[in-house]
Length: 462
Image 1: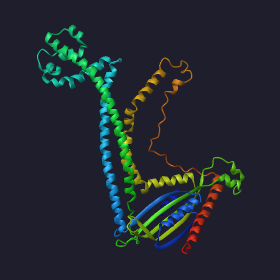
Image 2: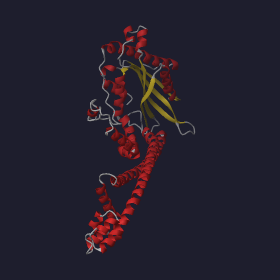
Image 3: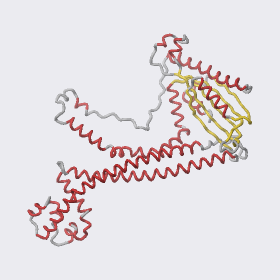
């Protein structure tokens, strides 16, 4: 696994390297391994490298105390993360129910809005039907529907109720007195309900929107709390080493693999001023960014030892450190990141992201619709005003109306990232810039190796 990044680079382009490779071995069971790592980390920082940790894996032998200790910590993280995921699911169900309620309220309120427009008659009939089905039906046998369908002499009651608007219309209609008396009381009752129900429904609609906002905020908060536990549980997982001979079940051993990538941008204009390449490069534009890259792979075979009564361990043992030099451009580095995200290294983080935010993203459009409804309505009114009779009479001559018929450009989805395409190298890049980066990479990789070797008086190196 330690050579996974080298394999990815070779897969992208077998000609990329490594340009140089140096290896040193440091073996001391009495001294800890951390100084080896941090000395090289700080040294690369002093050389002006921008550092990134690409791989961080460990495996402990099943019989070691380190295995049991980290297993317990992982279990605690998993349990806490699972509890928070349960809370997230509860709030998510609440959000779904609120959205469905808001949709129902909006449909009902639409009928009230249509009473003030061109569809007044259809809206009134719809509301009368709702009143009969939801309110009047509670009277059971004395309800309008029950009397119309079950009582002789009241067959016309339901049609009369749908036809009349107020008490004056009841007096004008040609029906017997028994039907009129029932119709009069019901139309008065309906008109009172019509006024009060709109007020109550509007109030409930606003309250539900406020509640939706609070639940969405709670969902985001739980998601933020859950991520660190889920990520910690994933990072505490041990890497399977298969038939690794250094891991014996009953021994107290562990294997740790780390890979650091250091990159430093090549200053083409500076190199041209110093005479390393042609002076023409000082003003040349359109050249891709090239980087001096050093890949440092650590493989530790350690003996975990508890630090006194402390809950953490110290590691002494054998460290194999490999320095590899590469000259890479911006496209190749982006492709390496893309390939790493496709591998198992990125899968766990995708799962964490999916469990906490993906569900919310699917509902985001509907949530935004209700929470930003007032802004949407204002924009719609402004568009109507702009497209009305008050618009510029010369707009059509200028082609303004024709542009509105054009299909809007499809915006890329938030989560979708365009695939990295390796652009071909220009002649100048291939013949001058990459060799400049390659020479610097080889020289720097050796310097890092040589400085560490001399600083520690090491004899075991290649």
